[in-house]
Length: 412
Image (cartoon, rainbow, N blue to C red; front, top):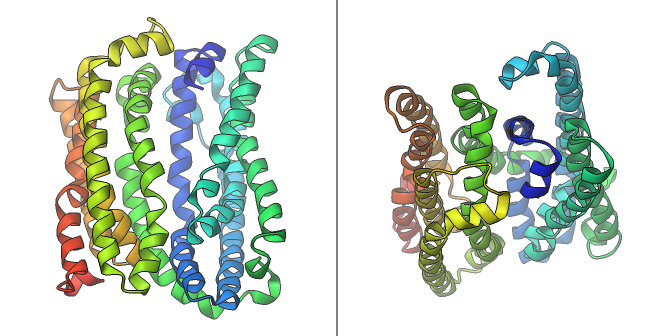
């Protein structure tokens, strides 16, 4: 996708697209944590075989999220008219009209995707992550084919690129929702009669904690492109993202392996299967170590891989590759324990630590960029340091919870 998109556009326009895409993540907090709240609550209901309660949770989540996102979309359509996207993205003012139209297309489909992607949450809660994670690759494959055709039939257009990459994931999710709610999940399919707003409190009590964690996470993990664009320009966004995508394959592999265990940890915790939980955590740490070794090999062969992947027109400094390697290794280490902590819903400490980390990230990122010669590497180092919860606190919290010694904030 990276190579084909670069061929279709150029490094500057591709950087503009990446930066604009980063803004989408900032709007994801309007989900107010309902997806993760549903994931845990529906998982508990399914573990107990209570499909009536499951249907209520699903229906109520769809109803609340539809109302919230509709209001947000309406406000955005009005506000978008007054946003100077050329200034926001630090690019040519002649692109303002095109960028404003692009924003309407991209954000419009993004808001619709908010609601239709809940089918993935249902699949996760039912411990079917392979299916839940199938939709994005399918949409990406379809988009890749369409963009490849566009390289021969049209001149590089941000509008066409945005339409393809935004509309296809929504189409896939709509078709998946229709299929699963008429087949596998007829018993818990959303319906107006099953909307019970009194159950919203239990969804939101947990969901709001996840919501606040997501906001802090957005600051730490999704603002990098925006900061780089402002300090260094769209070209550097492209350089950073090529290295980021390369080393993010470590996280991708790890996520494929670890994702099923959120729902599994929820079920095991409900059934008090502590021995199984300990065994799985130990095995996941072995896998993490193996991926760390693979990451070293990736670092060694990074330069020739970049050349084969995107050609020699874009130079990726070694220090960016090295810093991103450490970023993903530390991030995935914490992910082992975070998956368990999220599964059992003990996320209050994570919530507070995430907010401290978000503030720390902004301060460190700006300081390291402005007052050192580290450049983009300074931003990556700020991300690593800000993840102190995942690196240091999650192993401690896991041991306290699993050994039944967690008290106070460690157990909330």
